[in-house]
Length: 107
Ligand code: FES
Image (cartoon, rainbow, N blue to C red; front, side, top):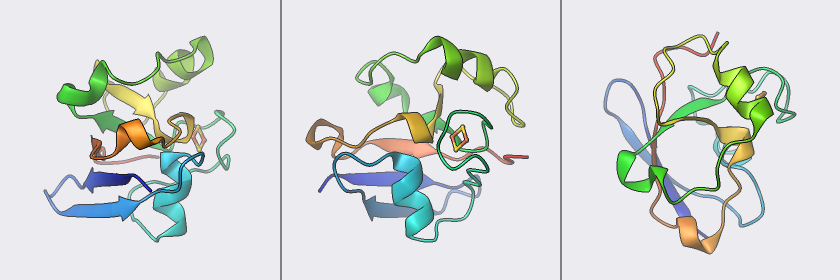
């Protein structure tokens, strides 16, 4: 099971094992991680699961869809080039060690 590191805005890190085939959002919320709201439950409709992918990993993820791109424009926190929706990133063995940062707000 890949381990994903989530870093809060205050620098606190949490390593979570996320089952392959489930999204980072699901892995985080099911393990009680603060900082991801996921109002729409992973249906790519809310942008409250926004994360910043570590730059070293940004090019190793599948490209974002048009819907994800459009939703990120409405995210509560600043959009950066590495912004993604964590409900649209599915954990795979290749993503073991992935690092994402949480924005300072989701709503
Ligand atoms: S949970 Fe709503 S867009 Fe990801």
